Amino acid sequence: MNRTTLSLIAGATALAAVTGFAVLTAPDPTAADDGVATAAARLPVERSSLLCPTPSTSDLAETTYTSFTPVTKGTENEGSAELRPATAGRPAEQGTEENEKESGEDDGGEEAAASAKPEKPVLEHKKEPGKPVTADTSGGEAPALLGTAEGRFAPGWTVQQTTEVAAGTGRGLQGVTCTAPDTEFWFPGASTATGRTDYVHLTNPDDSAAVVDIEVYGKEGALETEVGEGITVKPHSSEPVLLSTLTDEEQTDVTVHVVVRSGRVGAAVQALDDSLGGDWLAASADPAGSLVLPGIPEDATAVRLVVFTPGNVDADLKVQLASPSGLITPAGNETVHVKGGMTTAVDLGDVTRGEAGSLVLTPTDRSVPVVAAVRVLRGQGDDQESAFVPAAREVGLRATSVDNTAKGSTLAVTAPEGAAKVRVTVSAGSEGGTPATETYTIKAGTTQNIEVPVPDDVEGTYALTVEPESDDAPVYASRTLTAPDDGVPAFTVQTLPDDRGMVAVPHTEEDLSVLQR
Image 1 (cartoon, rainbow, N blue to C red):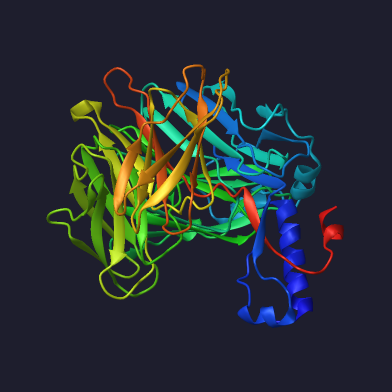
Image 2 (cartoon, rainbow, N blue to C red):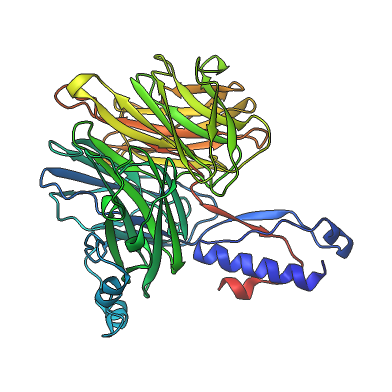
């Protein structure tokens, strides 16, 4: 690789640091012959985008948005973060032709949307990084939100949407981490069964329409979903697509695949149950041969694993639980066989048995990419509540969790492949207080529920950052938030992937300062 090629790569990546998005290329080992350093420096991103779905249609819904940016070195410039309403969506129950007509493509709809005056922000974060900012809304009319953070507020910007629904379908606690826009999402664990009402929420942050396909896979393969093809999502808008309108087949467990033909969207599945509450099902980590599902609540009364493998090749997986004492194999569920292109579900019962635990899936022989999630129940009888834990991405350099409370938050950290040290920082509270940091050692193959060191002066909600202190072993984490209500153990779980605060920029001898103006 010659010097010119390296300069182009470095220039493109420097531009990515400005926009908050990056495509990373592995350094070429032959480049050392040119005298060019190949080690990559890490710079804080300067712009981040997040999308929050429509929280609820219930008049009894109470929703809190919490925004937080960790303090990051190298971000001395000014900036701000804000969440603005998207255009209200409607269930996309009609076919492609009607969706395209309603998108306004024939009457200047995209141009009008791009030039329309933005609505007043629901939340503005301008004071300083390192302290959460919150906003509240009530009822079933709250829209989806489009979020942008710039300058020193961009690196690691994280927003949590938490909704309490007092009664009715989906009653309980529903939480979701607002996501960056992307072009592909996998959701194992959705359902078209009687008693479940699942919506696929699609949110478009851009000035042009996005075109999306929704594929649904059941226990015997792909389900016919003609109206799931070519769904148009208008610029700066959101579309909630009722999953049961895409297929006539009722199945307890399905895998939803969202593919964007043009543009970008944020996607999440809202899974509402008539009797078992409801929660958001976040996207699984990308298909991989091995997966980790971190932080299944220790008092889980029922755990149902849902696995899917794209393509036509079957997968055989070893199922293990990373407990506080090490990796163990659940009796009677040592392995799971997943047929290619078909959704497989396995009931694991109360697999955690009162202890911290994370599921670890590894291939028994050859590696076949899979996606996975678990549905978790807490409580008994009429007082049961449900939530989901999807396969997670690694914590990476740093992960961030927000909207934590002193008595209602549990941080679970697992190191399935080797011992790891992690530094956990409690931020100042949304209503005051001082931050605190503690370091923990996670033994190889274990999961630890960490008692977070919350200082006495922290008031309101706080944020957590988790930072591995070495690259020797991958670390995975999740946060469980609980809010018991009249005997119902309401809860929600969010995994903690890398917060995308830093981007790798290869060193070069060329002067790239012009690209960063």
